[in-house]
Image (cartoon, rainbow, N blue to C red; front, side):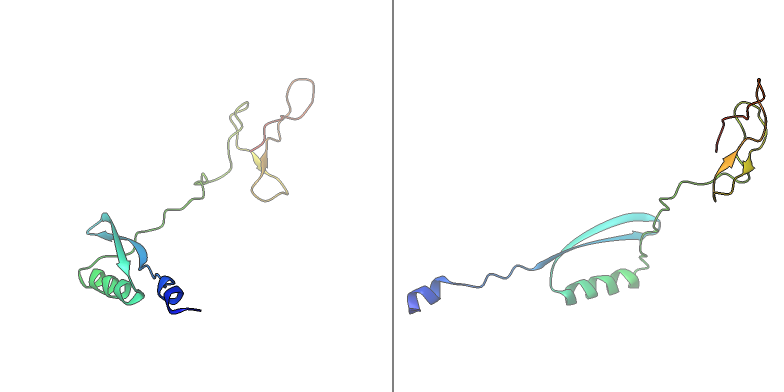
Length: 103
C-alpha cells in the first residue's frame, strides 16, 4: 500500500449518542448527550446528586377488575372456568340452553 493510499484511509470514530430519561421533582426530563461512556456515567452521577430519579415504568397490562365479571344478559356474577382467567355465565336462557356470555 502506498503512502498516498494510507493517508486516504482514515478511521472515523463518531462519539456515542445517549438519551437519558429522568424525573426531577416529578417532572419528566430527557437529556441527550454525545461522548464516551465515562461522560454518561458523569451525567448520571450529577443527576443523582440533584435528586433525579429514573422514570417509573407504567404497567402495560390492563387492569383487571376485582372479582368475577358480571353477565351482561343476567346482571349476575359469572363463574370461574377451568381455564385460568376465564369466566362463564352458569344461567340458562330460553329454550334450556346455557347463556353464551363469557368473560
